Picture: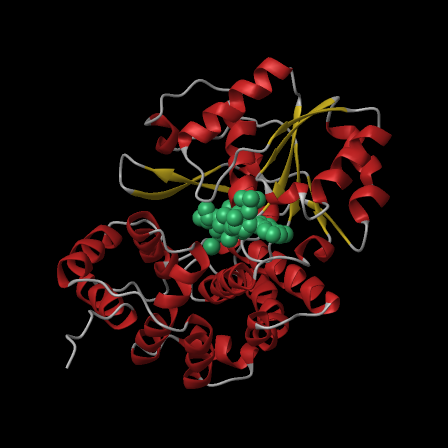
Length: 369
Ligand code: NAP
Ligand code: FE
């Protein structure tokens, strides 16, 4: 057995933990840049963070202009505000978009890079300390060292990473998800599911990451269908916990083919990140069955379902699928085949197989009549 395990984020989980355990923020600095979208002002998370910082005598500047699929321009705007305000730490509140933007801001405020160099990697340096408050149960970004930004140079989404991008603190309270729109609840749960599954189907899976993924699937899979209806407080807490476990999984293993292909659907068609993964997951799993990938059987056993059952669950959640033209399928298969995530798959699909996955997942419109 040979593996590394590094998880430096302190996780604080429970009702009212942001205010109740907010004193933990004191160690991070004197002035916070709060990086968020608009929803945190409505779901209570922003008020709670401001209360906690106020109780500590810490100052706060709010940057609430992060929108889904954060861009380099958005990150630059955040860095400029952080510098002009004199902030010395970052608090992220929201889904994966604000959490990822916050990681990029906390990193890039300490080093000069051109827009293109941002995606060149080599982020061994430092980042400002961060605390993250997730308000969706999907990305697990609160416990990963990845920031995924829109990359217009390559017309995709690209992850930048460094151990310094692990948040110091993650506060988990499902209360903020009470009014999460159903579509967001479904799509983010599918993202978390995809992380746990892909983590197990990764070449970089380890005994520790598999343990986290199996526990995530045990909790998450039975709740997946429920996200399409009204969930209880306990179920939302469980979803948030399972999403974090899936985040800890990919912090070790990375994501694989499904994420690598999904970025095309998001970049070119605006398909929500979790939905993009869900659309492509079913056929990817069928390919793994054909190729006799042993880890697939462990995934199914953790779910307590068959391959057909898992795919039926996904189909029910996804509803009508997006269509792609033959030209789009060819172009996206070609682009995805170069994606570094594909190479992390336990079975690395060929370009022809990637094309098949797109074709089955997003079938061309059939002419009427
Ligand atoms: P998101 O883009 O952060 O948010 C989606 C929508 O949900 C936004 O309109 C947001 O509103 C709203 N929202 C968030 N929390 C809410 C709440 N509690 N109540 C009501 N509305 C709420 O979605 P996400 O799926 O969480 O994140 C997706 C991003 O994360 C993608 O860019 C993806 O690439 C990335 N990702 C990162 C990792 C990682 O390890 N770093 C892993 C997987 C995915 P506002 O914008 O108004 O706040
Ligand atoms: Fe994801």
